[in-house]
Length: 270
Image 1 (cartoon, one colour):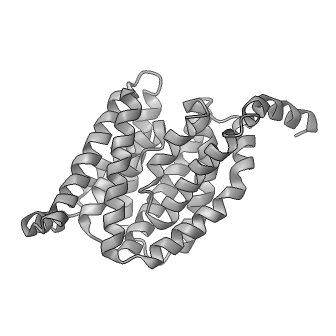
Image 2 (image 1 turned 120 degrees about the vertical axis):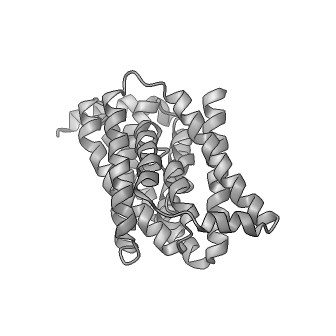
């Protein structure tokens, strides 16, 4: 790769970097995702993509995120490698890959706006059910939540939607959380399982993104600029996870799920 090429790419982004908010907004998006993946299993990551599209076109944002998320996934999987639950992960990955293949086939024809609104609504329903149970100390609701088992049908249903929404808007954490949160595993196993799941399905995006001409040298260049932001978010996310109790972790995760749902819906409507 010669110097002239890098000068050409730099010039393409120069008009953006003149704006003092350009790099701070991109950095905030990356920090959100890094904290989320390393500390909350992806729960806050749904906020990262909508932040990034404030300054980049959606397809460019998809491509810029991919290398950054893959690097984060590798580190997070290493950190939480002792806690993942294989019996759940293989079902989630199967569903996630199915969803991504469907999205790849119909990428140019899909009405992703409607899909994202539906995902947002399901996030609101799931989080509100949990919050109401806690607020009113409703034993019946909590018991119903605890009885939900990680069945193959349920995994494929929610994780295929996760793979689909992850492909088009990096919003795959919401359906995956809807599947995993009601099982009630402790926070370390939750983060480890979500991390391994996204580690595997994000790697499967590479050939699809290349085939659809989403990835380019220009987007890779911008990803490279943002890599130094990752360690800060990863370390902060793990520190937050270790400082929280299981109960507080689940409170925050469901609140994040609620906020991500609101964010998805409002972004599609307005």
